[in-house]
Image (tube, rainbow over all chains, first blue to last red; front, side):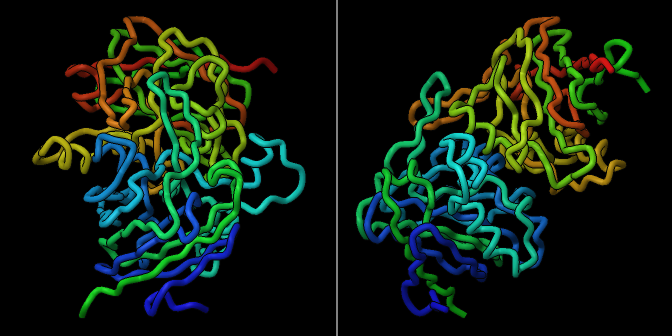
Length: 202
Length: 202
């Protein structure tokens, strides 16, 4: 088990992980090869009714694209993360993580397909999380464009090899993080994601 | 208690209600005076882990503005509603219902303010629903504009007096519905909402 407090850990292509953060820790999410997406979901570590909320975050920011200085809020309107250094500047907060059903509905896939949803709930299950508790993820590096008429398209990520975004934990957190499994969100390739935890002092 | 199966029921300004639908029933939501918003949330009637999902619905529709023929999906990717006749054509599915915290954060309100979130969880509580189970609502008649650069603005609803939208239940449902409490979403006025349930035959 890689300890992200002591250097970078790598999430293999089409897989995921779960970990905890203390308030004040900084989570650095790195795209080591470029054009890859990482889906992030989070709960208050000691109160799993408190979860990441796309709808509150977009409402309070009055914008759909969040970057440095913006806050990701919980469903109870408490800040969960503040975005720090952001070398990419484009992430998505509209879409749920890719799932078996998504591959079947949108891409007519037959048989099992790895998905961020499965990779999140599998790794969060030992912490007592049910699949239904995972809602819209913060989709790091995912490049979702919304036209004026409302049409949504998933474009290749703008992240280049080695670029990262940092998120400061504003409460004690339980997090799930993936290296995305969807062909459509990472320009047709499957790549790893790396992450590192810069522990708060004290 | 008004029975919406036998004619229109009125939701008073800044209040809400809860009711059940059978698969096949049509829920007609009417804006009797124009420029008012109604927040709708729903659960599978017999499985409250199955809830309305903005993120899945937007993903499967590939657009943020849903209207006639579009489907509102649950978090487990099953269809919950199909939109039928839509005399307005503009609704929001990005934002969480207005809440006490929203009024404090965005509008610096001191003291209690009625909110759709409170009106939903209060009326859904007798059915065993906790506030944390209510995520992003389908905000009927709410006119949220997203610019190309991602900036979100809440504009006056385009609904005129007497116009409605119809939603067909695709499963047995428990629903919460409000007449919105937020000054910002209904052009500064508080008005009622009406609804009617057209029961499926058989």
